[in-house]
Length: 138
Image 1 (cartoon, one colour):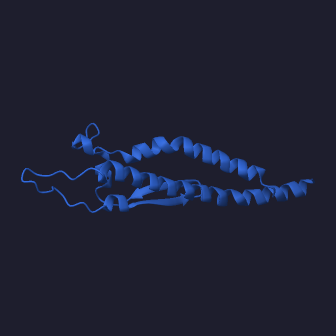
Image 2 (cartoon, rainbow, N blue to C red):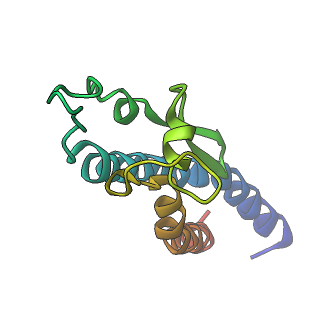
Image 3 (cartoon, rainbow, N blue to C red):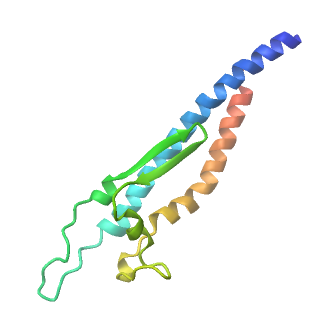
């Protein structure tokens, strides 16, 4: 292989990098949103609403928190999970030291669980993406 051929092959491979990492980030984002929605379902929505002393429910459940979980691919190398509901962050932080106190049964830190669960997965997927790019014949 001549130097020109090698340079051309590397140029083609370089063009693959953004596309492959964007696809990886999209897959990670979709999986992360699914994970968050599953955690919200099992830790927030599976628990019956609290009732007052008169037996009436203290709030009306809408499912808006779960429905609002979305992902955004901000660059080929970055994906974020967002929830634009006004109470998403206070609800997530509730029950932590120095934060609003809630019924201990209702404590759910789904984003913290997401980070801990996905940290090794993301590292493996990025490694696999790099390996696939390098092995591809340009």
